[in-house]
Amino acid sequence: MDRAKLIELGIELLATVDIIKKQHGESELLNQAVSVSKAVLKKLRNMGVEIDFKRGSIYSEVSAERTRQLLKWGEQNHNPAEWLMILGEEVGEVNKASLEAHFSGYKNSGDYTEYRNELIQVAAVAVAMVECLDRTTSLGPVV
Image (cartoon, rainbow, N blue to C red):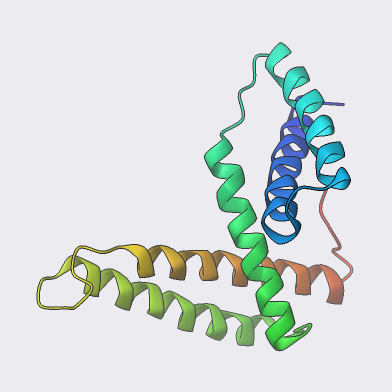
């Protein structure tokens, strides 16, 4: 397995373990996933690669938001122009949250929590766009 694929696998495993832990708590499945993750991480470390655990946590947040979107809206198959309108609306919410966090006079001044939450939603919409493209075109996943 090449280095890039191993890194990708390590990050996916970390995100998956985090999601399982948050949704189901401790379980035998979780323990197995942790064992596999540790083996992959050991191999990566032996190759001189360190995984950014914080990034894995962010990916799991995006994945959880993507799942929330699927439960709320179901599978969405929009054309690219429609997707860009949806993404643009989400980016507008990021802009608003940033403005309110940055400038005094707003109740959320100095608090970037909503800004961060909106960024996770933007990332999840971008993932939904790629999922739709892969489902509805001959491109499929590019490996």
